[in-house]
Length: 224
Image (cartoon, rainbow, N blue to C red; front, top):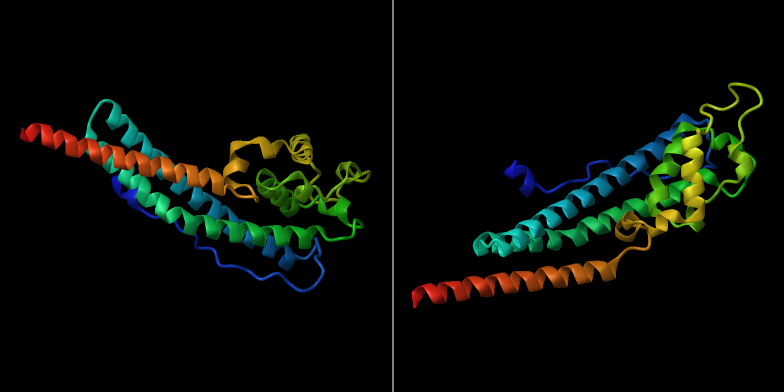
């Protein structure tokens, strides 16, 4: 369990180039490109979230031991938080690259023409792509469809997968920009959160210094 805590999460999926041809929602190769880019994005997001969980767990350890108190463990907790924070910039950079790649893939897939949009919205891969990007894109960048594109087929089987009511509700939420008010968007959204991270780093640094100072003072008292 402890060994898992010290393991560094990783992104293993390779980066896949976009084809230079126009996207075809019926082309297996094109759909595979979208799936591969989604895989890399999901791995990068998962790795970043795992790292953030380690930071929070370390801060919790440091704070809890500070309050109860066990200053030595408090120092360990805050030092671990500092260690993981030092790695976060690289993980965040990797995540933002994967996000940019997936945004490019989304723009390629949805295209400029609305001609095939109704059929695209009935593709399982396109639906998955929208649900993957929706929580981290602004409404201006995620909204590519119109209400008419969500209308059911007159003849059964015209589309691979009819949009479900739950899917339509998610799309309506994205179109309203409700995701932009979530904590997930603040931490992992396309616009980034450099101010929040700077404040977080400053808090951890201050906590480490306070904890170390407390250890020094405690030892001085014992030596008297």
